[in-house]
Amino acid sequence: MDKARIEHAVREILSAIGENPDREGLMETPRRVADMFEEIFEGIGYTNDQIAEKFGRCFTESGSGDMVCVSGIECFSWCEHHLALMYNMKISVAYIPQGRVIGLSKISRIADMVCRRLQLQERIGTDIASIMKKITGSEDVAVYIEGTHACVASRGIRKQNAITRTLASYGVFRTDSVARDNFFRMAGGRSAETSGSGD
Image 1: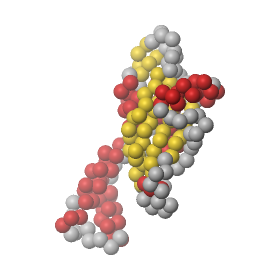
Image 2 (image 1 turned 180 degrees about the horizontal axis):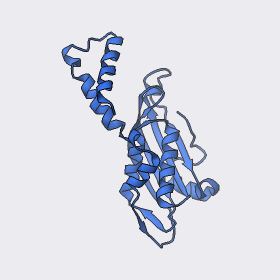
Image 3 (image 1 turned 30 degrees about the horizontal axis):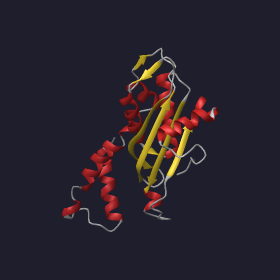
Image 4 (image 1 turned 90 degrees about the horizontal axis):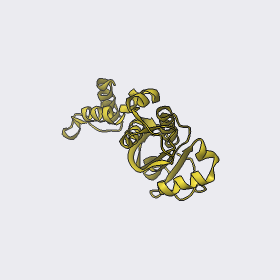
């Protein structure tokens, strides 16, 4: 990440909106923004394959293959259309093990790294699901996300209570309504019928 270019660009933006980047309150702003971007956009430096390798340690499990679900993962991301914050995001991830299980904390780490990119909510779900499939070898993966978008809440239509819900489902979660409904119950979602895709 080229932090010097970010600092220069932030100074230009401050000037362009009519501010004085040399006034006391803004003198350090370009550096702070560059430091912030380095943190919140860390995921841009990794492909999905690299994230899978980074968090891909699994354990052999010869159990029943019942669903594993981690729900309520809190994340932030940034809409690529307006550079606006996607917040109050709750992500639920489920999979059915096929002889390999991933450590539960790794699922949250995967979600967090995927969100540290310029994103669409739809893509966050498909990225997480793709990584989970690569790591576990299971095609039975589902990712449900609820989030609020600043580009909807604070500009344009300005609907603060609008919630975007997306579902990325594969394998049995796509073909079997019972498995899908069980996932929604565990994830705290309303129902398979009320989930949609939007940004």
